[in-house]
Each structure stands twice: as C-alpha cells, then as structure tokens.
Length: 228
Image (cartoon, rainbow, N blue to C red; front, side, top):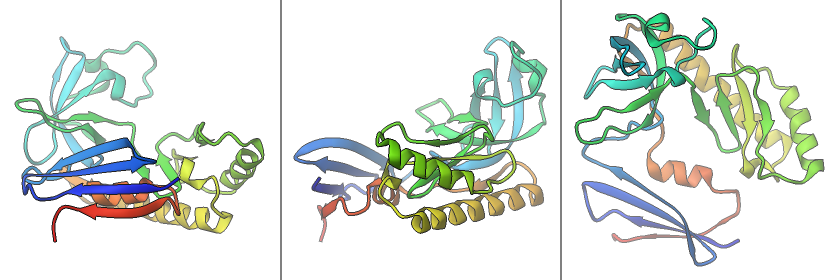
C-alpha cells in the first residue's frame, strides 16, 4: 500500500508527523521541541514519596516534575491485592519507563513494565512472552515466526513479540533485530548497575525515527517536509 509521511517542522516548538496510507490519515504524532522527548525513556528512579490514599507513588527521575506510578504499573512478587505501601518505600530505587508525557502541572506517568522496540521485534520484561502480533493472521507465517522466537535466548526475565512488520522478513533480518535489542538491553542493564538513581538509562528515538522504524519495509513512497 502506498504510504506518505508528512512532516510539519516550521514550528520550532513542535514537530508533527502524519502517516497517510492510500489517501487516509492513519497516524498522527507530535513532539514538543522545547521540552524534549521523554516518552519511552527508561530511568533508574528513586521513590520520592508513597501516597497510600492514591495507591501510587511519586518518583524522582532526575529532572523536571516527579513521575507518577500507580500500583497497577508496579512489578513485584508479593502476591495479588497488595497496597502501594506494601511494595514500595521512600528512597527505594526502581527501573521505570515513561508511558505518558508530563502535562501542565502533572508529571509523567511511569510503569515498571518495560519494552524496547526494534524494527521487527519488541523486547519486553516478561519471560512469559514469546508471541507474534495478532495482525499477522497467516498460520504458516505465525508458526515459522514462533519457531524462530523459540531459538532466541532473551535476557533473563524478558521475552519478545514479533511486530507486524516482521511478517514478510527473513529469519536473518529478524535475527539481526534480535541481536540489536539484546545489545541495547545489555547496555541498559550495565548502566543500571553502575549508576545511582536518579538517572536516564535509555532514551527512545525521536518521532521521525520512530515513524520510519514502525513502517513496514517497502511501504514508504514519499516523505513531504514543509521546509526547504
């Protein structure tokens, strides 16, 4: 399907990227230049304070407003039905990912469920995950991809999902993505062990790189930018 990317870059305060597929708007992303990109970043955060009334905690990320994390976004092994004060304490250091940017007087939302996206795979911190995108419906293709995933040795506690873009890619291409994501996480893990919180461990790509990465191979027909 012919796909065009439109980039609005005249406004220095905000970058907008639209994906047009067969004449219809499929996706619109924007990124504020003044604040920088934080969505998808992974941090070693320090728990600033625990709020039992909200069943949540506020996190020192090292810059800007404190992050917010709800009990539902906390990975722990203390069993179901636990309250926030039973799983987190002030001063505790945890790894989190920003899932929603800060808005006005509210800090960014965070989660301990981490993921790093490649071109064809997504690495996620759940060793129960070795799956294929539901949008890949061909059963022969799904079986091939599942067999390929079974041959991958994910970092401890992690798993992989094959993205839709991986449906028609060769085993070698997907394996290269696997090696790339594995190396990315090794670097994140090494830095997490080396530095003290708060610290940024991984910075997600900007909106342009993410859009190009997320398009299926061979789909792009044109890129239009409103600047010479």
